[in-house]
Structures are given as C-alpha cells and as structure tokens.
Length: 408
Image (cartoon, rainbow, N blue to C red; front, side, top):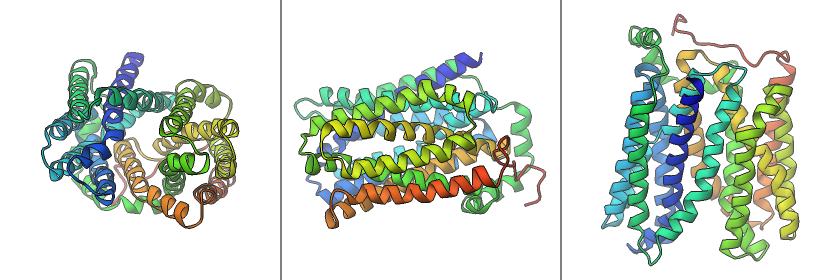
C-alpha cells in the first residue's frame, strides 16, 4: 500500500512539474506577443512566486485540518484552470491573472511532501521525499524540451493547453488512486481545537524563532537563496563568461538537473542508511560552498562539468534532507503548515535571488553571484555545525514542539 501511494505521489508531482516546465521557458516569448517590456516580463515571472508565497502556507494549514487529499485535488485543479486561462489569454493582464491564480492554488508540492510524511516513518522519510526531488528533476528535463517542440511557429497557447490537460489527468489520478493519508481522529482533533488553528495563522513568521524548527527554517532560507541565485544567473554566466549559446547552456542545466534527480531518487536512501541527517546537512553545505566558488571562477566547459557534479550533488542532498529534518522537528499536526511555510521560503527566495544575482553580475562581474552564494553557504555551514552537531546528540534531530495540548 505504501509503495503504491508513493508511486502515485511521484507521478502526480512529475506530471505537475512536466506541465510547469512546458510553459515556464516560453513565458517571456508569450508575453512579448503582447508587447511586454523586459521589466514587465520579469514581473510576470515573479507574480507566480509572489502568489505562491501567500497560497502555499494557507493550503498547507488547510491540509492539516481537512486532510491532504481534498486540498491536493483543489490545488491541482487550480493549476489546470490557471493553464487554461494562460492558453486562452488575449491580453497581457490575463497572463498575469493566470499566473497569480496558479500561484495562489499551487500548493501541490507542499501538500505532497506532507502526504509523504504521513505515510512514512523517520527512518525512510528522506528516501521517500527524495522521490519528489527526482520527479522535479525529470519534469524540468523533459518539460522545457517538449514545450519548445510544441511552440514551433510561435504557438505559445498550445503548450499551455497541453499543460492544462496534464494537470486534469493529475486530478483524475489523485481522485481514483490516492487515498487520504490523515486519519479521521487527527482531523477531528484539529476541528475541535480551532484556537490552535487560528494561532497557527498568526505565527508562521514566529516559527523562525521557535526552538528546534526555527534554526532549520533559517538554514533553509540561506540554502534556497544561494541556490536560486546560482540558478537565476546560470544562463547569463554561461553566455558572457564561457561564450556559450542558449542551447549549450541548456545542456549544462540538464546535466545538473539529471545529477540532482539521481541523487534524490537513488543515492539519498543509501546515504541516510550510513549517516544521520545531522551529519549530511553540514557536510553538504561545505561541498556546496566550495562548488559555488569553483563555479564563480571556472574558465571553460570541461572544468564547468567537473564543478557542477559536486554542486548538483550537494543541492540534491540538501533539498531532500532539509525538508525531512523539518518534518521531524514539529508535531504531526503541523507538518502541512511547515511544508507550506518551506514552500513560501522557496517562493520568497525566487523573487529576490535572481535580482540580487543579476545586479551583482552587472556591477561586479561574472564571479560575484558565485561568491555571494558561497558566503551564504559559509553562514549555513557554520549554523548547521553549531545547531546539528554541537547542540544536539548524534541520535537526535530536534524536539517536537507546539503540540495540540500546548497552550497558545
């Protein structure tokens, strides 16, 4: 039963990211057909992340109260509707409306992570969460290539409608194949304790100051900001520093995505069987630190391939183990809320990271975004060493807090 549930979640996330990958690279070209400026295109891309910053935590909290399955169905349906609106757009403002609507309802991944947490225990959770990362990687490898093929001749509406169809397929798959993961007793407990639920609405930001989970969320923000800064200026770095064409830069990104997917889909389980998450997180942070420094100064493509291997490896490890560790730091009835909050952290960093990287690139040079990311990861590594190796024992991650019976 567990394997079937996990594979269903894997397929749902893969199809979701396949649809997302279909349209994301085409948005600038689509917006240009409505005479959008570069600034407006940037705002269009950022609008999704801004909306998800609001929507993901809310959907995560709702999944704690009403169950994962109904919220996941609503979220996937919202994504499908957003793609339909995108494909039918005949004005620029409709493109914005489509992306904002999709962002507000787009808590699929946060709820999927919460679902996996419900059906796994702490010993195999990271391996199971790695499936989501693998689905991410595969979707982003296949999606842009398929979207490019479908948009031949400037037909940018067709990929949007195909993405809508894929999301509709996801709704059907989730409806028939995915049972609820939260038992009725847990859902009823939250319904009977509305004070706890209302309090959680007020205390998302306060979670950053809570013992146990607070340092993990702060480390996640540092890691995400370093990662999206690298991701946001990678193509620019490849074009100006290595004199590569867009397709060549795309091949390098596909190479990195393939390594990340391999780590999350296959290697993370073996690593977790030998090392604790408390050990993996600081070490992966140090590897990413030096890899970003290497990326900043690498002079040619062969060395770039060498640098991208450990960089992608560390990204794959951290993006899985950080989420797994957060789920172990909170009470079971807060998992959806925390996964939504982690998704919001990702959305916030995606709004500011590329802008910071681009500004550093323009003002200081191609090396600056990599050094900036390395500095962030230096802070991450020191913080992780102190919080996960010094202040806790090797067999402990964090102490669950804020239980239902805790006064608020």
